[in-house]
Amino acid sequence: MLNLIKSLSRKQKRNIFVLLDLLLIPAALLFAFSLRLPADGATAMMWSYLPVLPYLLVVAAGVSLWLGVSSTTLNEYESESVGRTVGFAAILTFTSLILTTAANIQIGLKPQVTFGITFFVFSVISRAVLLQVVIAMYRKGSDRCRVLIYGAGTTGIQLVSALRNHAVIEPVAFVDDSQALQGINVLRLPVYSPVRIAEIVAERQIDRVLLAMPSQTQPKQMQIARRLQKMGLEVQTLPSFSQLIGEEALVDKLTPVNPRSFLGRDEVSPHQGEGSEAYSGRRVLISGAGGSIGSELSRQVLECHPQKLVLYELSEHALYQIHQEVMQLVEGSDIEIVPVLGSVTDARQVRRVLQDHDIEVILHAAAYKHVPLVESNPLAGLANNVLGTHTLVSEAAASGVARFVLISSDKAVRPTNIMGASKRLAELVVQDTAHRIAIKNGLVFAAVRFGNVLGSSGSVVPLFQEQLKRGGPLTVTHRDVSRFFMTVQEAVHLVLRAGSMAKGGEVFVLDMGKPVKIMQLARQVIESAGFTVRDAQNPDGDMEIEFTGLRPGEKMTEELTINGTLIGTGHKKIFFTVEESLSEIEVASALRSLRHALAAGDEQQARDMVMRWVDGYRFTPNSSREMSESAVPVS
Image (cartoon, rainbow, N blue to C red; front, side):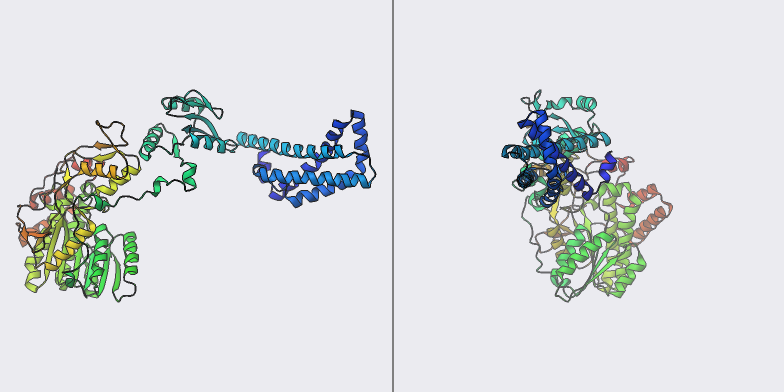
């Protein structure tokens, strides 16, 4: 029967309702006559009415179609449709009066009015009954989703009212934190304490929990949701009805706080001024152009008005995004933009690109930089960061590229992980090429070293903000761990300025200010979002900070120089350091050992090479596994 109802077309359903109304007309007439006369008198009057009944039925069918009474489906039959039924009944009453008068059938006015009222009541009741019958058939013929409503307040009550006549969703009960509501019935549904959820789920076969408490903070809702999900329940969160119509802001519309607000010091202006002549009118290549640093390099280099900008990127998606952005920025100018999809480890492609576009300046930002990922994949990290740099800098020297700037990291200083060690080796490769080839040929090759970039991909602030959206906790490796921070705009501005003042072979170091405690940063992120920190002093706070333990090989505080020596450059934020470098033979030996390790797929051989040639590197055997499992990369 249910399948038959589902198969009916809208026209067929309309015809059924027309037939229903036609059958109700004689029933309403007989009932109206019975109210006025005894049984035999009512029957006699019905017989006398039969000559005009066909005409009334024809008129009824036409009026029903005209008013659209028969076209209204059961679940749409509400106040407007009831109003049409009133009009329908009034027209039938008037038509009946005309027909009986014309046929000289002696029926008074009162039975005619009673007939109209009776027909209206019969019509409304029949549709209400049919609706309940169809709903019962749907409930019996399909799997019901039994839901538990968490929150017996206004939103919960409105939700239950909306679900009462739903075909497949059945509200079963409420749970609420308010003790005043526990133990009573709301809309005929019992209200339980949240501590009984597991019991209720088992007893009442709950399939899903709907969180109907939009007044609670998002962290509180997410904490409840996670607890319910651990029970194997599907959980969904509902906004309030005032949020749905725009009277209150939805949580998802909140604008994340700009990472630069956590810097704790004044930024250096990102606008290019002095030094832009090193890039103005030049043909510039940026490797890793789609990354956080590379994309900002692209934007700021465009402010220097280069002749051509080559965007070199391994990721298709990242290259597409930055290419689309810079094409809009250069609209109306004569700056040529060239997107190149490829790897810096591909010597033939690098050589061809440098020659085809006659590159004059290279800003090398391409690198694998996420500490846990590189630690878990040391061969890939070393191949990209070390051999990729060697390929690019060697081809740059051979092609006569006038200026080459390596983007390095403070983790290159006495590194305790593969990522930092790979960046230190990259520095040594650039220095070797600078002293051995570049300087002799009037070329300027240098490196710029700085710390963490706020807001970059995988950095700690976006990670904290994502954890905040999920309801926490915010995870920090150690209470006292600290890092240097810069905004990406500030870092790139200083990189370009340092690159313009380089003479060759330098390792520039940017003044990052004082180290920032990650614990304090997490607290700032929580408070800037309008929440409170939950700790021993404030056990009722919104968000907890969880300490996961310092990872093997991770430092409490990063350093910017190996020997602590900083030499001024004339710019208050840019220094350079003089550190011991490897000889040409030592660099060649290190690269040869790395290539052998890569060819053999031998991670231990690669680590042995790093330990031999990179000062300060130490490897803990379980660090790779433990770091990959760590909750938060403080990069």
